[in-house]
Length: 384
Ligand code: ADE
Image (cartoon, rainbow, N blue to C red; front, side, top):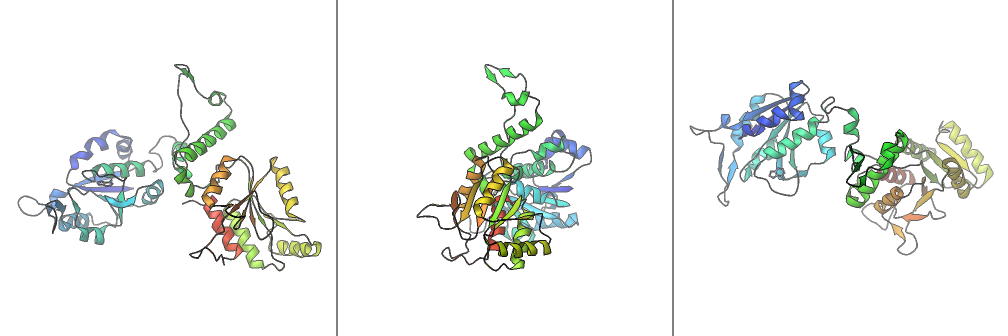
């Protein structure tokens, strides 16, 4: 990957690029970073790159022409990022997305900002590193370079370190400890000294979950629960009398894509069950679908398989105010350590009732069940 920084203060980057892990990555040829001095493209004897803001308060604005000339001089297709407090907030997802670009150009603004015509015509993404104002784009540029470069294979020593980071799959990192095992009467959690890798992994995941739930519940909307649930999760669908094979196919595909352990279909009537069994085998979805004579029998089967009572959530309005938002249900799932069941179709309510998937008009949920299944699974197990 190649990163070019356009800046009026190239000296800012010297020690950053010489001493940091990023510097080592540059040295080892894993990353190429060049810093271009904008003054080299300035106008007139004084190499002017900024001017007074039109109609403004006397502040200085970087001119569009020197920036554009510097960009054109690179003569290479690139993805242009402009750090500014007006940009979208930098998240790990954005870092992941920009780390896939072959050539990233970071334009450092200063003073009042950059001529908006340059931003509008040349910038692919305006990025903020937080809701506060800095004096220029150099520090944000280093933040971008640092966060992007550590995703390049080989830059951070251990491959696992990046995978276990905060925000990997949307959760915060677990706490870390080092020697001594007891320091000023404070002991390291004993499990970390046990040598039991499985237990340690479980402890890590639980710590990540509880930290995220208490410190950053807002992250829950985006997090996939896939790696954090301790038991399997299931979809239980009570089908209409006449099943549309394509609806069944779509539900199965959704279940497979989102890691659902099994799709359970309760059908009371034996003849109907036989004909559904025939359809299941015709569609070759036997490994995902399991038929039951009742809802209760389905839940019992899960309890036996997982050696734990499942926690079920159905979709609907619930009694009175009883229905929960999907975020509340997501948090509920994480705080329990039992198998989860998403119940679709109209019959008994689950342990909790989740407000149904709805479009603009909340009173009218006209979404076919197969679409609702995909939307719900994506909210719980999708990556965003
Ligand atoms: N430039 C000044 N403040 C900034 C911020 N918060 N994020 C990105 N660029 C900036």
